[in-house]
Length: 386
Image (cartoon, rainbow, N blue to C red; front, side):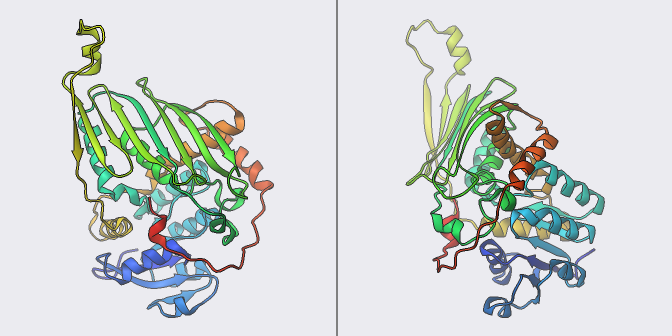
């Protein structure tokens, strides 16, 4: 299905916090070529009645209405496969909120349907628009760091208080979300990790379940990664640590990139470490090196950039920043970390998607959605981004 003139008619399914952020970006004109025409939530409210769009209580009715060229799916994770399938089977363009599904198998199903439909299908991996990560990716891709040796990312400033989980019936349950910190918060970091450094060949992970919160899923993770060239890595994620740390280190034979949560430092060796190691006659010598701080303005509207790119791809064929199929890599890493913990063994890539789905289903079968707490909460979405 095409768009109407130079505008793409957007429908939004799910009206939670992140959906409202997308709607705000469209209505405030941050997404060139997009018009909000339809919304879907279980009930109407003062918020929905104030929007310039037709309201539906059933996503299938929105999809069949003829009011939309494209649909943003911002529902709980457990429904991504069903809603995404309906969008794609109707021939509409799809923007899916992260993660693309509960498992790699669900992601592969959606990708196959998108390819068959021949539509534009994208994933809201908004941190790919962060100028910091764009610069880091550019430097690694240039080869300036040489062969990668070690990668460390400690990402523990995703702190979430208990009320964050209490006000949702599906979040942090196997049935509703398929995981915790890995598939919700750290899915962004896992995407950036592989986007910059490539996929590991295997990993061994240690997840702790409900360590800090009254939840059944993982809220603390430490994983050891191995890469094809012999490089190693460590990834740490948590929603129970405060004040928390965000430190991303990429060490290469010829230099390093270190982000300490505030500033990015580029280190360069005058000669590669491996060369110096074999040629020097100084018993305690080290390669001479320099360190250069890189000034990067990160003040961009990441979500609007991804959504504008999606619309431009529909209208003019602009290359997607985060095509739907790119979501498989981060989801595979998250699935593998859980699988490694459950089996108490390393997991190799490509992930055995069928075996993971079998193990996850065992968790889902005994999972129960919680009763949503009726408490007033202070919601500041800007505080949720890291």
